[in-house]
Image (cartoon, rainbow, N blue to C red; front, side, top):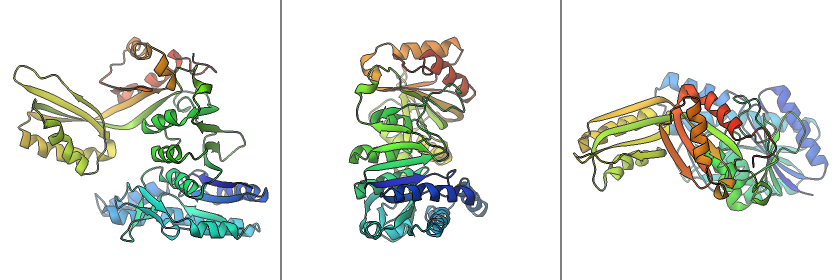
Length: 409
């Protein structure tokens, strides 16, 4: 008997018919003698609908109240799945994040899990029930409902699996595994049988929508066996593993991209110690994450330009903060650009293969794609380019590195 945590995304529970199909799958796992915990997202599109309603009422919804609103989406799906399981003779019980006591910090809309009290879940499992938990949500020390950010149900599932010491955490979604890139952009994208946690962490952080970055962090930290599977078919999916031996011959595991980028530039700031902190400190205080950063070499007048990127959702707030900081610094001008994207190559094989960056830049140059920013680590290279070049850039690099082939050596 194994203890399995299964997570189903919004498309997997997007209708009553699909919820019934999930119930059949869950029942099969339980009938095989397994203990099963199911973590659910809201129905596909429901969270966006709720956010849209909030913005009709308030241009910038109060974060606390927005969490109260958004958390209702998952309550619908957990109740419906529990009903479907019970109707099939499979005893089940649903819980919100607060009922399971998924304790988080108080960063509304972006909360992080601090602890999970698994006693109630274990008691139900020992009693032979399937436990159905609302993903994406928790509760802070004040008793307020919190949400974990986009894709937070993945994090909920992995955290619960870690708390229960589950044998495997299975992420069911609308794709049958992790691909070399998004098949909707590059039809020749190939499904990977396995990928390392390190590569998956980079892919998730760089825009891959298959798994949320914090779920991969959790899985890696607590050594939770993680597998990505399709809700709509059978198959082995993609195993996320610590073992690099099987992929050491591959230079590149995949190409990630993000359409959610925005660029901010401060022109003419003094080139002196502490300026970077004066620019980015207030941004960090507003809980806005900064990604790529470039500071130009100072010209003769001892002034420099400072550029960084943020998520598009944070652009308006970051611009407002930056304009205030720029005045204090005596900067010449603040510029913003919402029409950029980020494309990234990821692969543990970069550690032992030289020339990857040169090959990447050459391939993009041959297509007339200008690179605006560059960021590197030992297993990834990211570039910022104009938004209009996203699909061409991804397809160009996919072909240049032979990712449609079984080996990229």
